[in-house]
Length: 117
Image 1: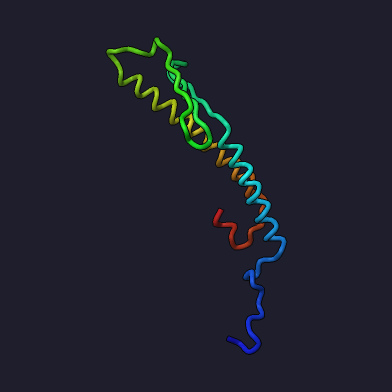
Image 2: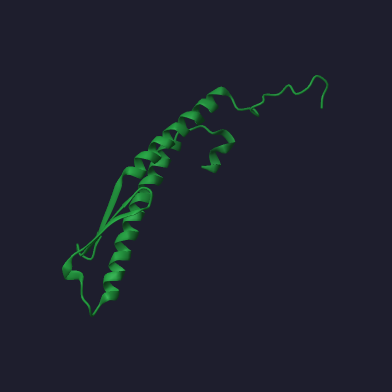
């Protein structure tokens, strides 16, 4: 070690503005995550035959099946509709989460970290 000990910035060159920016982003992300977890997303497929509702935690909250969609001779079609509805509702939740994350990180000057986000 050089004589006199370490004299550099203990934050590795991070300035206070970057630290404050990162802290604000973290607070905003936590708030957004909480809001997203409580929000519900729904998707309807098969011309309204099947509807799925999920939340931001990717938990299926409800599946509604129109009685007309129940055909004992074609159970596979109903299964496919349920899967499609759930997947579409999950895509909606994920898409909104990605869009919100982009809003949070856009405009941030993260220096060399910008390529990580």
